[in-house]
Image (cartoon, rainbow, N blue to C red; front, side):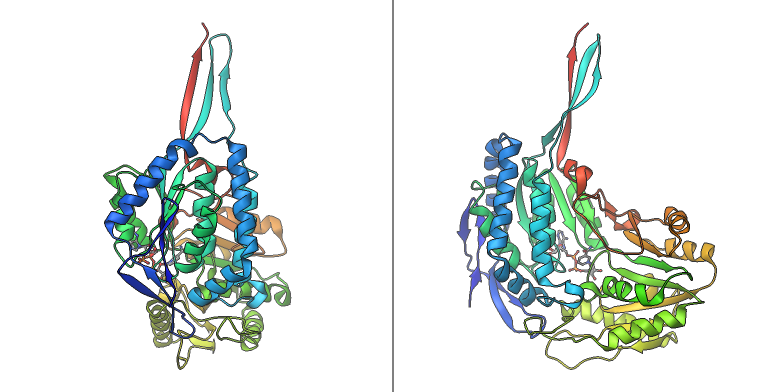
Amino acid sequence: MTQYALIIDGKKITTQDTFDVLNPATEEVVAQCSAATPDHVDQAVAAAQRAFKSWSQVDMATRQQKINEIADKIEANFNELAALITQEQGKPLQAFAGLGAGFEVGGCVAWCRYTATQDLKVEVLQDDDQGRVELHRKPLGVVGSITPWNWPLMIAIWHVIPAIMTGNTVVIKPSSMTPLSTVRFVELANEVLPAGVLNIVTGEGGVGRVITGHPGIRKIVFTGSTPTGKGIMKGAADTLKKLTLELGGNDAGIVLPDVDVAEIAPKIFATSFINSGQTCAALKRLYVHEDIHDQLCEALTQIAQGVKLGNGMDDGIDFGPVQNRAQLDIVRELADVARANGARFLTGGEEMSGPGYFYPLTLVADVSDGCRLVDEEQFGPILPIIKYSDIDEVIERSNNNPNGLGGSVWSKDIEKAKAIAARMECGSVWINGHALVKPHVPFGGVKDSGLGVEFGQQGLEEYTNIQAVHIEKA
Ligand code: NDP
């Protein structure tokens, strides 16, 4: 059985203690991973602090080149990384609408390439007889990255690449359920980067907490659940770390009566069930105007009935399993609650026999706000469809939720859709689309969905401190 090592100061370190990584499609062990102790975290932080001294002084052009070399490495190992993602996470290699492990690895390359074109410019705030004031952006030091199990490699890239581009060094801790593709990525990146710039510590429980409270780390970037994000905020308070927190979402999509149902149904389906619904910004509550409600339900049901679930390593599989048993239990429970509330299951909703954490793609109608399936983030392959008649009321219902990550409006009337979008309480609103994250566009949540943004210039700048340089003339 392969044992994946920690990587600290450019060296692989295997530990006596290990933990198993399972394939959620088979429940078989894929590999073992080294289990870091707090001492390993100390070593990783110390290595990152040493590396910071020189890496922070390297010029931007060299760092951009290194990021492009990392992209080359990912491209050269594309198939291996995609297979690792499928085995540990469950998403098929290709998947429905091409949104599988290959898409994830391709996204990693694209994100690296785009980030390598970014820069930190000196801003001149004043330049007159009295003096000149320049705003400089400086790296923070060691960044701690804590990633989840849904898009393991993509999210690792989202955290690591802007951090090192801006001159920081990194200690990353992937989810214990999906660490393998991240370990392999860090191995590849270490063929390009100086020792200590990017370190990885893996472990089951506890390692994230040690990172969060570590006095040698200046910032935490975290993607995961809202409760864990709040815990990280508390844990980071004593050492006053900067934070970027990308937390849960319960994105509403509002469909107006003027849409072409046949045209939007496949798009809504793909964006609701992307990665079997295990995507922070997936469409998770679908509000449909009563005039087209039945028609859209019918179109979505037809698509759901034509898809194939299975082991994502096999050909022709559209959707994989839920990544872990705990998440499968959440999905089952929310389905049961909806059923008990009188909801109507258009497809799915029946448990599947194992092995693997499979749950059928499930569409639920005759359900509304106040039912847990609508109010809570399901993070799995089950979509509540809520009928509405009044637009003002539906906007209020969509906002009446602690989350505020994304939202969408579906209509042929773009001006009307924009006016509705402006009233939605969320960090991103898409019109006639959903979950379309882009490397040049800042992405982040409001309310319980997080703090700060990733991507774009604003996302890059979150990895820096401002230094105002005053040059007095008078
Ligand atoms: P968590 O938020 O608990 O885990 C995400 C990461 O945080 C993992 O690396 C985990 O490590 C680490 N972690 C856990 N506890 C702590 C802590 N106290 N301090 C620091 N790091 C910690 O997510 P879950 O896996 O429990 O998923 C729960 C829910 O989160 C899902 O049902 C879903 O709603 C939401 N979620 C949202 C995601 C998003 O993209 N926004 C992604 C994944 C889940 P370890 O693996 O060792 O526990």
